Length: 193
Image 1 (cartoon, rainbow, N blue to C red):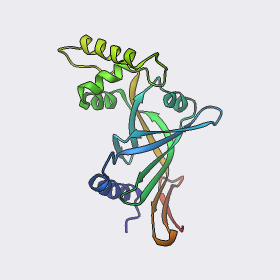
Image 2: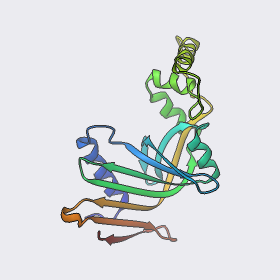
Image 3: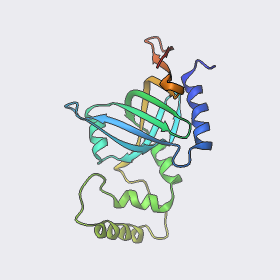
Image 4: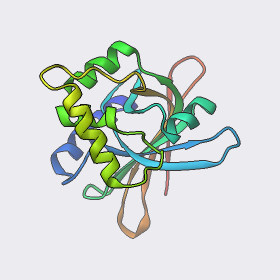
């Protein structure tokens, strides 16, 4: 049994990618504003490693404003088919422009265009307005590459706490908890239930 949380994450994530029917990389992202009022939404994990867990968003969005005001957050992966969860807590920072550019270039063209057309978290008068914006952006970039919008990019959550939860019979669940010590080591505690 590994005592390294990143190796354990890689193992569980690989199993989820094989067995979870939809969006195995979906995770709940919980943030809080400057006054501590929380909010949560689903985002997609687009990169991970010992340096953290990466997702992308419009930097005009509510979550981006909350992350700027309070750069601490929590992630939750829930894989119902595996009866497992992983909770991750830590600090947030923007991914580099180079990293954001590289990921943006790998996206489907319509997703790239959607990033330009969307004023995420801002109200529109109708769906037709959004579709009209999409058509305008599509025409604007016709025949060429779609550059990353300046208001769109990645964030990395650098973990300080990682908890692996496994469902067990009779609600006798198992939790393996890893906390980052001040010397940079990960310290494990096994908790029941």
